[in-house]
Length: 265
Image (tube, rainbow, N blue to C red):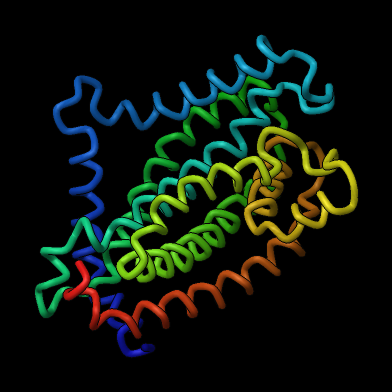
């Protein structure tokens, strides 16, 4: 397993090429092209802002104003995460022709799915930056330094889960359908459209604490939205350790099942 893991460094040019191809293919033939990478998160933000400020006014506490900025801090990384899992779960079956080539490293496909969606996450950051400049111009430089750390931990966590799902979906096709419903439940079980400290009851708070993405969402919110120092770093450290273990587990399972991929796809 560790031998194959070390080989990933040798495939960095291939990964870069496939990520570039994926980004170009996604908007090929569209009029706006790559501008959709900026427009999609902005439209998503407009929809949620309209629902919770016009259709359902008063459903959020006053301390999370401006609500649009609070939403965007969580929705943007969640979109990267959920899209990566959805595409990675289907990546081996979609790339069946490549997998059947003897020398092609199959683990590259879910990795490309995660990295290409991470690029869309980065494309949405200028919109988030514009909101920050408009609503919160006094953001702390020390807090901003934590931002790439949270992104790196989320990347590791998403890669581990993507490898796990990609390997299992080849043998259990129902995972694709289950995943879409599970992600919907996961979204509402994550403090993205509501602050974590307002979760009712001890059971709800225990569920939120057990949800790894809760700590990513809260980390982004503390860095970019809330005033004061970044106090969620202990949870982030715990999630980092869990992400390392998840990545090793995901790659181990992927490596054990790789010989059966060509037959199943």
